[in-house]
Amino acid sequence: MYSPRHESAMREEFWTSFGRYVSPILSANGKKISWVNYKTGIKNIQFKMNAGKSGAIINIEITGDAEKINKFFSLFLSFKPAFVKVFEHNWKWVPEMVQLDGRVIANIFCSLEKVSIFNKEDWPALITFFKSNIILLDEFWIRHKEIFQIIA
Image (cartoon, rainbow, N blue to C red; front, side, top):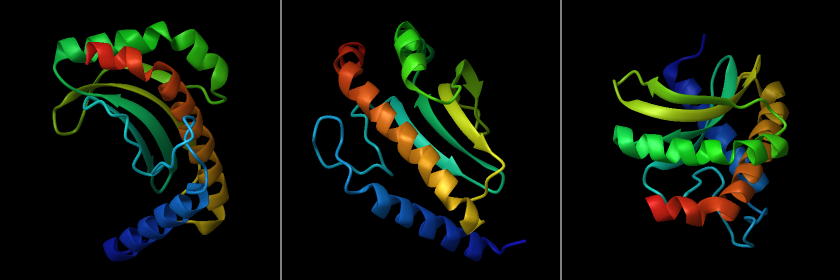
């Protein structure tokens, strides 16, 4: 299909476009933020966005030892009723997921299917998906971050 070089260039072009599109939007705390490389401030919790040939995913990835993963995931679960009310997409809650490299993580995610980062006609749908979800994650995080910092 596409050469690795072309795929890399398309990915870079998409994420640059997305970054420009959302850069004027301030965080829920009123500060300027890098939406593409969202920093939670907690080493073991990352908000990630990824798009490929057949879909996109945004997720909360929880890493660390089993105890740390369990504590953070349990805390997220305690907020699940409020979380579900705010988000439009159906998020999946996976307490234990083995990565390709063998690491065990917990993952909370939602996906958008039948879109491709390599099809520019899909970019508006991808941008809308990522923008709406990362902004909502930011609002959630600003409200609850301090509680997570206590157990970090």
